[in-house]
Image (cartoon, rainbow over all chains, first blue to last red; front, side, top):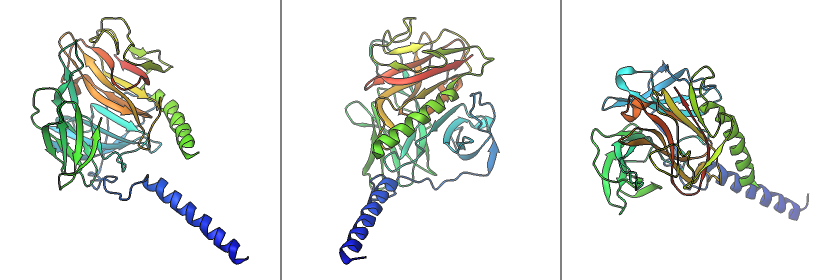
Amino acid sequence: MSGKRKAAVLLVVAALAIVAAVLVTRGRASQDGARMSNRGGPAIAIRGLRMKLAPISSGHLLAVRHGRALYRMQLADGTPCFGAGRAADLGTPGSVVCGHGGFPSGGDPVLDISVYEGTRRDVRELSLFRAEGFAADGVAAVHFLRPNGDVALSIPVSGNVYSASNVPHGPIAGVSAVDKDGKRMWRSP
Amino acid sequence: MTRILIFVIACACAVAVVALAQPAPASAGWCWPTCSAYGYLGPGTSTNTGCWYSSGEVCGYYGNWFNVGISKTCYPGCDWNFNTTGVVLYGFENHDRIRGRYTAKGAETVYVRPYELGMSGTLRAQVTWYGGPASQLNAAGIG
């Protein structure tokens, strides 16, 4: 093989490696916000899921906060699921989220499963009824934002979950995640 | 090319997961638009059945629901993290209030029981457009 050809091959290999790295990391320079260190406790039986073809039979309890149990589960095909329910009824989540994109990922460090409430029919203005969810490593707190951007509620993240015992009245228009230095990592919408 | 491949995979996943939101065959239920199809829920969509919002919402009849679930596709497109730009609220409502959880994710199946929303009694299962373009989804409630 000539020197030019070798150089060309090396160039192509290097380019492919860069493309692969970008794809794997989804363009993120860091993996911060893409992992959950809390793997949960031992596997427990999951009951009461009446979803056709959703064979979730076991999961892991990640945490109990304010009377709520937060779970990590998995479909038979490997799709990760997260759920929550009453702590008094362990193993029976009342809600489940199964995302084929997986969670967490570099650009998606928060899975908010808060409950929102509206009491007016003339405007789509919703307030918090309950605040809870899951967060990746590196997320120090989750902020709930007013329409003007002010922080209405800040909940610290512990063990990759967050939960508040009380929530403020008034409209909420977004959620953001901040790191330990208070730097915003993510916002939705 | 990669984006097209991811989009195709996402669509395949979405088709696969739509079944997950379906109620068990023996259960009384509500489906939108049908129990085997996706519909587009946008600001002008309505079932015209007296839902909480007169438009931008689909809802079932009043009943004692076990849960409501939706399967949302990547329409009109997903980013690297399977986020779409269409946000919906799924949950329940009664005469006094509407409650639910937001999602903007494509290729995702979610479900919630009334007690998770602090609700009980006779309710309507609902899915509401909240922002962005129309979302393509299948909704189902088990009675």
